[in-house]
Length: 155
Image (cartoon, rainbow, N blue to C red; front, side):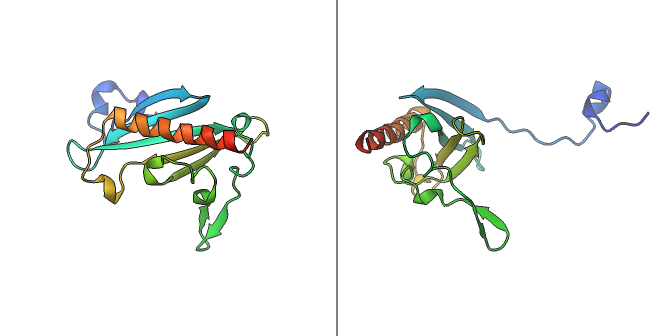
């Protein structure tokens, strides 16, 4: 009986197969001021390099102007689905290591939706710097504090 299911192949034969190279990614997670966040740490292209990113999850119940964050995509170049997240009030908040570089929508049911904004530490101005977890965590907390401050000012 022939099957392509990897787990049905005897263990001693698996090592002879061509398998994808796995890379390790560490995810540190937490919550600050009611906003969940994740800090991702993964290997860079060069030996010993680390690529750092962080993501802040903004739940619908946590902000007043959530509809302004629940973006409608547009088609770019007749083939790319694009969200103009850089035009949101969140992107204008302090932090983000200079710029928001990631946006994702979670959920569809009103009242239970969430948007995820993120940034990376791989900009031109980052290449001569070595970061550690404490640096990324500090920038993440600064960013969340700016979001919280925006919410207070818009009250």
